Length: 380
Image (cartoon, rainbow, N blue to C red; front, side, top):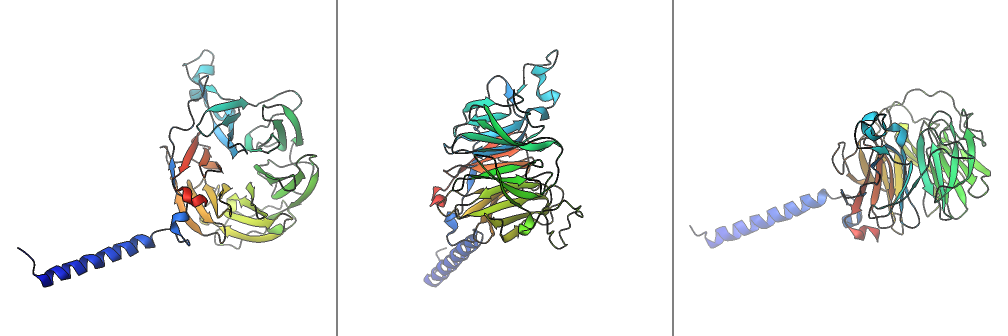
């Protein structure tokens, strides 16, 4: 049956209306930004990294960073591996695989292992539980730990030669002691001032700053820029007023190009923002209902010229948020709890390279992953 001209016009009008409605609906689900195409999106690269040599296997991942060359540095915990994961080391061996890899691993962007080292050595005490790694542009590697007596940061060359340390292996003292750390979680280097900022930590409740060359103490502060204290806090309550002190751990720290310091107060589901002198600027909360380990595990600054976004790794809800740095709004997420490629089991740490590729490390998953940027326009 051939439609009449009137019916044909009506059908055409209806089809056009439906098309316009679908286009509007699709647009409404895009991230809310000035240009939705600028929001970065990612896909997991299941081929990264390549198989490790020597039947090596990694344990819990305590830190990950990208250096000035674009190399990816990982610190992992060989002592977290179970006997079933290291059959080849048992006496007698129970299988051909595997052997714990050294704690420090350096990869290129293709997943090739470049260097490996770490563990106890002459002249220093290695940390009890590896946590946090940073590489500065002068070629030094900084390593922390979060075992009970890990009150130090260790400094090495790129090849693993011991250079020096801040603090020592000993019981922590208090959050106002400038000579000892308190299970430090992460460090950030301010190239402009040659200063080392420390998220301190699992024991202390502060940010502390040192001269990165001399290790001399510079300053410290707590939540909201307050003098930190170690008074016992009530359990986190998402409906209660925000605590005026950091909880533990103070888990991450990053410095933006415009001079802001971003700090993860993990157990209290917040990111606090400061100036370099410790002046409080603002705070943002994410998934406030998250209990236990909290929602703000790690952050990374987006590598476009304006550093438009923060990426926030959430190890409780096992996802990464794309946050607009201007106002803290979430404009996208990726990842999910699980064991498949692109999923996470206690997403712990994260880093981003200059090309916008994201690198992640997990605790329970005991693995590192790479997520490739799909839309390079997000870097403009």
